[in-house]
Image (cartoon, helix red, strand yellow):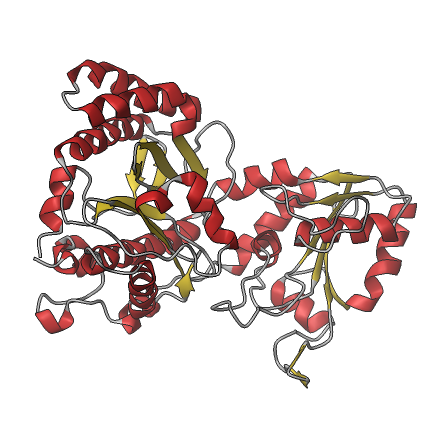
Length: 461
């Protein structure tokens, strides 16, 4: 039985597909028609909340400053600028949320150029019509920005800037100015241009605001999760001994596009054998071949994928056996991780701390530790328990596939629970997208197998 045709009926029904072999893949048009827009009023409400949160200063946000590279699948807007502006395709613009004045101002650049030609119709015209259309207090040419901000700084306003989720590489030695990192470069530009300004980080407050999703955001993320489920199953269908990693990556990307996605929300990780260990995995960011290798019998593959759509991301994963089934020891180790994962999942609800979720997962593994009968099972228990909370990673999913979240879960959060560990030659990892509700949770990426037995059954060819 092909994995694709193992997709649960409820998913196929949601896509409006029939059960015939020729219609086993959802039609792209069916998906695109279901994409809900984020209402304009939501962006206004977000800006209003930011104006209140930063009432003593000005939150200054920069759009992605340049065009996409030739290697990228599409232009991806700066996530915080997009979150507060709703402008997904305007490069170089600046959004200033002036707390003391209670006003939002958009500074718009001239039309960008590509291949020496101006890209017309992309950047809205400055003026009252654009301000009214997007519900800003003003829409100005960006040549006004420096003088305007200097005046506000002289009036005593603090400048608030967002920060990067992780430290950005600057590409510069010693005391040379930074050459890379959008957030780093923006802060450096502001600090240099406004030396008398007090500059503060808005990162924590913005993270809190972005972490709780609206109903419209949840609808987009659930649709992306469903597309990702099908894309992951396509990887599993392609996987077998002798297959190149690049082939499984292509299967994921092709399927994501087939079912209506715009592209991968990050380049897929379908790492086999030693490449699935974190120490080797992170090296893919600096490898021309992405660590490309041939999958070998008996190895395990980390499948970590996400489909982008509606200007939001996704993040879902599983560990799959190259040969179609786990060995006895691999199965025991994997099922132990699943037991811990489900124990943590069961605790997820509004008001529950992330530490409490992890503690439930750890306790479930501890209770099963003495029941392990294989060397792999015992080694897995030791690895999981010695790793403590670090094994049980939880992050948010939104405009970015990976977002920081506060230490306590709240209704409306969409999180990814992605535990993982390694023993000997094998690395184990899984991940679901989960909506936190007032009285529990709901798995948005529903439809994937969990236990070793379920995975083996699904992979029967």
